[in-house]
Length: 319
Image (cartoon, rainbow, N blue to C red):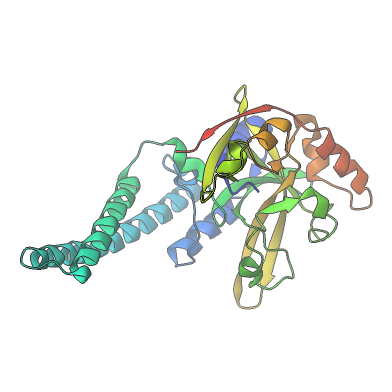
């Protein structure tokens, strides 16, 4: 399961590399709905291209980003004041008497203050960092699709809600950010062969068992633990990751564009690291064939997945 990925969040790089159009209306809708309280999680890296807008539409999106950031900063500053007051109250009590409640209150307030200060720093920061383009399920990313015979970039949520399914699927099936190859004609039959996409990824992250990673059995009484590994292709490269996507519509609810990465059995180096799935990087010569599938010829799509790029993945413990 690719639970997190380092993506190319700047849509302009897609345009430069592959010549797609940008669906500016979908980007504007996403940012407008976020300002209105949709809760959409947009990585800071996706905001970056709008810092220096080139069109009137991009100027409007920049204004919406600034409005949203200002609102978030106000909320954080108000909560920061509350937690600092809570911390001061707890410390005042602890000066005269140690109580469990005061100790716990101090611990919680200190942790919340640290977290809010980091979030405020991120909102104020103008320099881009690599982590700005790392996505997790529920966050948005630029996805390249085919529309009316043209390659198009649309912002989509990384966790797919298939069209026609109830919104509760997000909770009932939390793993729908990945589409297993062996289930493409099962759970994903409404999308496979119909709506395919591509996302540029430079690295991905997986949860693995420490015992599997170290290829050993636990000692008596020893408990296993989860570790997060970062996998990067060597040599470094931007991989075109095969995806399925959906345009979900519901009564009295906003439209949702969302996607899932197609995964398959892993190459040997990933299996030896203790993980059993891997995303599929397709070759550039298959872009249009993948984005414009024929549902009557699924064999051609499986052939594209088979004729994939096969980089060697190096791994390290994720920060």
